[in-house]
Amino acid sequence: MIPVDLIIFDLDGTLIDSKKDIATAVNLTLTDMGVEPLKEHVIYGYVGEGVRQLLKQSVGVENRSRCDEALRIFRQHYLDHLLDTTRFHPGIDDVLAHYSDKSKAIVTNKQTAYTMAILEGLRVVDQFEMVIGIEGTQELKPHPAMILKAVEGFKVDRSKAVMIGDSVLDIQAAQAAGIKSCAVGYGMGVRKQLEESRPDFFCERPEDLKELFH
Image (cartoon, rainbow, N blue to C red; front, side, top):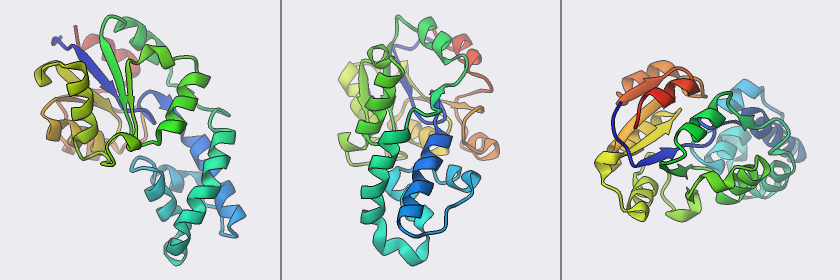
C-alpha cells in the first residue's frame, strides 16, 4: 500500500456503467436527425473524449456540419435517459466507503450538468468534495489541466494524489500532471492499450482498489 491524500476518479466506465444510456441517447439523436442508428458497441468505442467528439464520430463524416444540431438534440435525450440503466459498478460503493477518510474528486470529460444529475440521482453527490467537468478548464483529458485544478484545489502534494480511470486518456492525463495513475480493467478501455500506457497500478475489479492505498 502507498499513502495518498487525494483520490481522483474518472466517471464513465470507472465509477459507473453508463454506456447503454449514452448509446440510447445517441441513437435517439441520430433517428431525430434522419441518420441511421448505430450498433451499441460502436458507440461505446466513441465514449471518453467528450460529448462533442462522441457525436462527431456518431453522425458520420457526411453529417459533420450538423454537430451543433446533434448536440442540441442529444442534450434532452440524455437528460431524459441518463438514469435508465446507469449504476455504480458492483463493488464501487464499498470502495468509496473504504476511503471515506480520503479526499475524493471526480475529473471527467463529461459535461458537468450530466455528471451532477447522475450523482444526484444515485444519491452520492456528497461523497465527492470536488467535481470537475469539461466546463472547468476547457481542456479535456489527456490534457492535465483538470487534474491539476483538483490537486491545487485540495492543496495536496502531487506525490500523494492518484488518478483512477478506465481510459488511456486518464493515464496520460495523470502522467502529464505528475501524479500516480491507476488503470481499471472492468470499464470501457481496451486492456492492451491501457497496459501499454504504463499506469502505476492496474486493477481488474473494483474491490482490488481497496488494497492499494492508505
